[in-house]
Length: 73
Image (cartoon, rainbow, N blue to C red):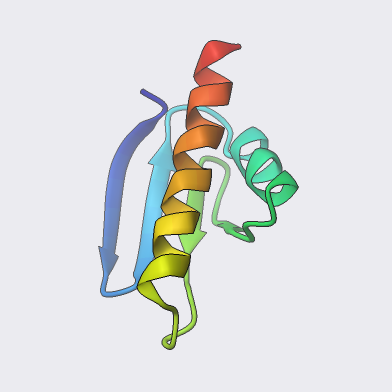
């Protein structure tokens, strides 16, 4: 598992990685998911307030795939 902790309120989440978050962010951007690096080892998710459930489901799938790809390597 690459994530150590998830914190947040509402749609704004911070995901704390056990390693540098740069590789995770790069893989997500390759799949057209924009996330923000917050510190050396954390990723911030801050979707628009009008985000749809379909868009959230798609983002979660991209996030899972990026984590799985990194864990394989």
